[in-house]
Image (cartoon, rainbow, N blue to C red; front, side, top):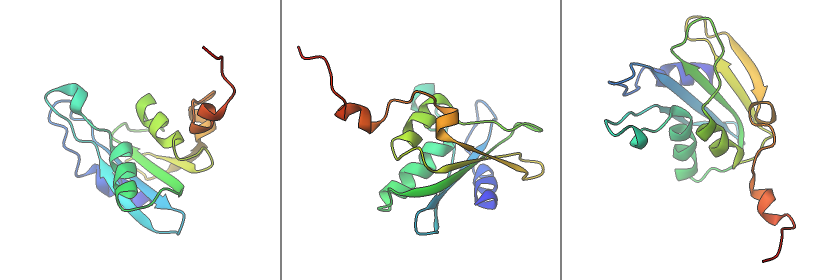
Length: 134
């Protein structure tokens, strides 16, 4: 999983930021079904992060249950988490899967969870909660 994320980083299309990110998803059946890299666009809002590319590739292949995701970016010497939009995309599929943040130079990793990365998350279960009637 760690190697898949690091290798995906090499395929990043980032002519503007020059900031490469790779991600790989481990599905519930044990397969590393999907890897993704960031894909930038001159219209910055059309840019897609590596984490969402990997996640959406897995969903496009029929998978919606995950054990883990590994994320590897170009920042040396630090563990960096996904952006807020990616955190929200990940929590859509539950908070019980593991997040591995990977240092690119050593492939050293740190395991965190989504509850840590996205406290007080808005999740699909919140739509089932009792709400004010209008």
